[in-house]
Figure 1 (cartoon, helix red, strand yellow):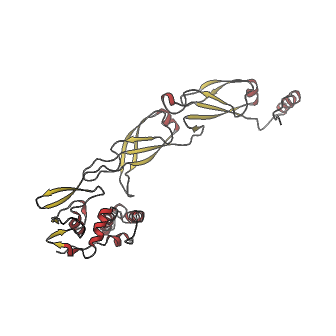
Figure 2: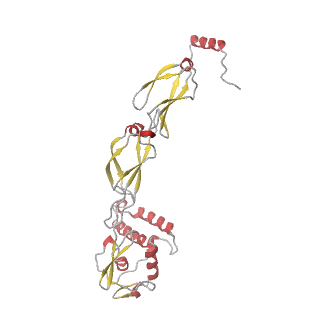
Figure 3: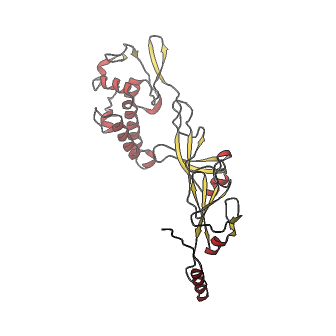
Length: 317
């Protein structure tokens, strides 16, 4: 039975001069459109998806594309019993039987010998002929964002997370156990060995990197490794000094507020920030002087007496 020629450029909807970026964009667009998981009721989607994948496998690789282009639609003229490479290639016969790997077409298997996936060829001798097999190749690394509360980031611990598998949309979900180090920082990446994209031809899977994103907190802000807390003080506490209970992520502490402190001044609680070891941050307590919004007649009287008696000048200009 004759083997049908496959026009890979037409399959991807690109011109014969399409560059690498054009090929990639066309493939991703069509792969999303025809992925079987996104078209469970369309029996033709899987066939179309395989055709798209096969076309991209050939055209994305310069050597395979060169060979394919030199063959062209009249490729059968180069067949003489087995398959003979076109002019410019080593004159070696190919004779590949059925059952090639990878789910590719007979046309693909006849030319490329049983399929491959981006990893190049590995030759094996068979008397006067040569067969081509896929070389095992490690899968690519992948990255996912993992959101945690500030309390979780500070304490760390064992976490169970569920992620969608990387790749074309529609992938299955998987559940992983993750050890979150205490003091993990925003933007830090945690490596999960062997949990990335699957390998090719029996090769090992890549790694998964979890990029930590610390969620906003109602009390604290994070600056580098430090945690910042705004501490409101009454005017008399700021003027006279006070002992104030200050919350931290390890529980409240008593802090002595020096007399005469101003808004914006920062006090430090050492070792209550993020990070670990010598790089562990602190908690910074930023002073905010709060004034009462409503005054009784007695309070207004006292404030007025203070204003009259004081020679304090808050604006030195």
